[in-house]
Length: 293
Image (cartoon, rainbow, N blue to C red):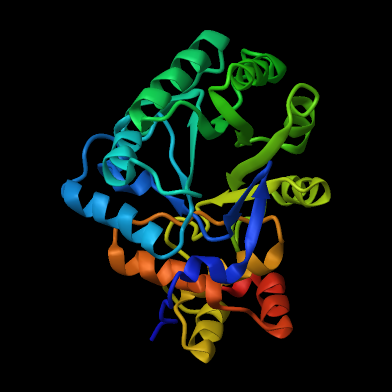
């Protein structure tokens, strides 16, 4: 049994600020709508479009993508499914990471590359300005101030509304904030992987939205036994819903972006926005990371 979605369930967990924008705290990560290994077209292209449209129907008004997903295919899917975009829908994309073969991700934070990537994303998404443009990963051969400074230039030119970061540590976040107003950080984080706890705490302190990627781990938080399964059974929910509810409870700046190519799992994930953990449930799950699975 799972918690059933209600009308516009993505709004049930409240909202979070992204600069001067406000979005519902259950977003959607579109990466999994591409082919295997985030390369090429999916086996069922129409299903991918249906998932995007259904996400918006459920009240999701924040969709995350990147130029490297497909590559390029994911942004085109979003435009095909949703353009012209409804009022209030925020599309976030990223640049600075190339992905042309499975398992190979190449960082490239050079100013020329970032500028070309942003301008290509504008064309694929069919917009004049990208709501949130994120540096996908820090290139160790390029000072982060130089990479982020290029995004500031694009922001001044009206091509980017707000600037975000992905895959950064607390020091890199501080460095980037010397040259730009950073409205979001997207790092890997979930119930059993809290390596970015320090970055999350910095975001909480300064009112920066935190987008946990892989919020359900590598699928390991969706099945199995342990305390997570016990809490889920007691609430008549799925393990995935409890894991997402824990993230929402963990911090008011948290903006989960669970991704899926399944309409059923989309409904299930979004419905977690209406699930509130008790103090005891949250404390138990927070303590018991080693015995959760």
